[in-house]
Amino acid sequence: PPQPLTPEDGRSQGLSKVAHIIAVSSCKGGVGKSTTAVNLAYTLAQMGAKVGIFDADVYGPSLPTMVSPELRVLKMNPETRSIEPLVYEGVKAVSFGFAGQGSAIMRGPMVSGVVQQLLTTTEWGELDYLVVDFPPGTGDIQLTLCQTVAFSAAVIVTTPQKLAFLDVAKGIRMFARLAVPCVAVVENMAYFDADGKRYHPFGKGSGERIVRDFGLPNLCRFPIEADLSAAGDGGRPLVVSNPTSATANAFMDLGAAV
Ligand code: ADP
Image (cartoon, rainbow, N blue to C red; front, top):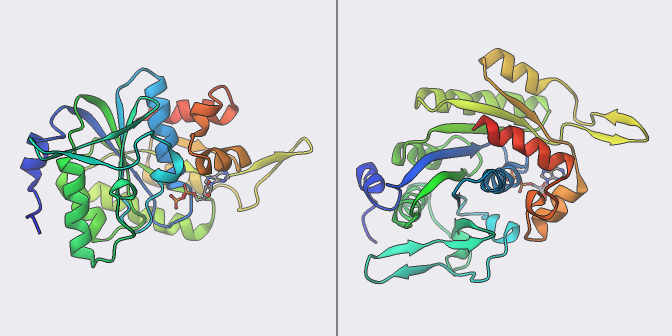
């Protein structure tokens, strides 16, 4: 297999014209990290920025479900040997799910190399933001990603459960050690409104506690919302399909935070 690129190679190649690289991370799966990453990317695009999104999950890529580009398989430019991103609604999108193979069976170190290579050999062109949807956790793959490219900021996604809180602390510490500033915590599935009342089915206050304990600048809270899920499953992110909804507005706050 080809040798993984060094960080210097990565910056001098396809990522050289990318101004800000944003990590969207969570320590547990299923908390809404990919939903957040995709809607954040499209929110930034709606704010007028040139945006790309990279789905770094080799084992369970979500981007192919969440966006519907016309072409669904990544191509390599034979001259430059770089990957050309797919484009959906003006946002460049790259995922292992667009690599044209079945799910990967690889050990950790191999996965790290492959993630690094797909990220750095893509010709992203000129971008204001590249949103990177991290695989869940704080292991080798995440560390390698952080050592491969210089992230400008991290967004940590959690749900209100206590377990999620303890894991989030790990994530914040990982980014702090790597000198990547954590600019926002997203407390996803924080509440829902029904019959004129607000319900907090997973408890209350963990987002506030994280923001306070770690001195983070922003807390964004998203409700449990069937439309957000349906939009993701339907290949058209909510902020694109319903840009005037309350949740799309809440994503503007997150966009402003990064
Ligand atoms: P992760 O990337 O953390 O594994 P996903 O973004 O894939 O999580 O979300 C997991 C599932 O939960 C998806 O089916 C998604 O549509 C749904 N989901 C995420 N956030 C919400 C929300 N705020 N309200 C309703 N469903 C949500």
